[in-house]
Length: 248
Image (cartoon, rainbow, N blue to C red; front, top):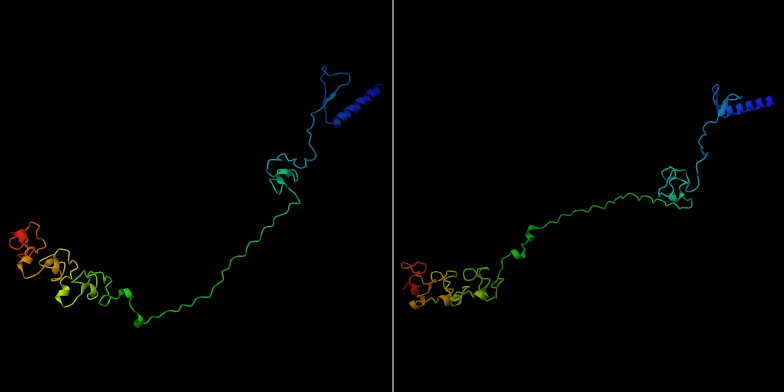
């Protein structure tokens, strides 16, 4: 009986030593003492470490976050094939080929154009038609408008002898008696007895020039203005005897 009990104690101590248990020796007369002497206390349990990480589809801890976490095609935080919902990895998905780059543009040189200078003979160079003065008895641009436009006897807008039909220029005094551009306007425009805007003898109808004193009594351009314009007794703007109504 004693031998069998001793054998059990020895075997128990050996197993406790191999398992890493702590052996506690009780103090003399303390609690836990007994006829068997020392006894063992089990140590703390070791944490469980799984042999492999999960590798099932979508077993990644960041699955379904809309970001691929597999290596090579994502962040690499999870193992391959564990974030399929985010990465949508499929061997059947066709790959889109990248089109080749177009060839560089090389401009094609064109044949140069030979410059042929154009020579103009000075003898054949003529002025523009607009630069030439009009020539002819009625070459005036205002011809046949009923108004004389020649200088001296008309407006002077055209060259001499180019408005013959309107001006009726001739050596006869009858043709020039009313050649003034202001003829028949009721105002004398001859110099000395009128405004002087026209040549002498070209405003006969308005000026009524004659040898009779009655025709020149008020031929002054300022006649009937209430101011005497004869020389010596007035302003002198008119000739003597032509402003009788104002100078009385």
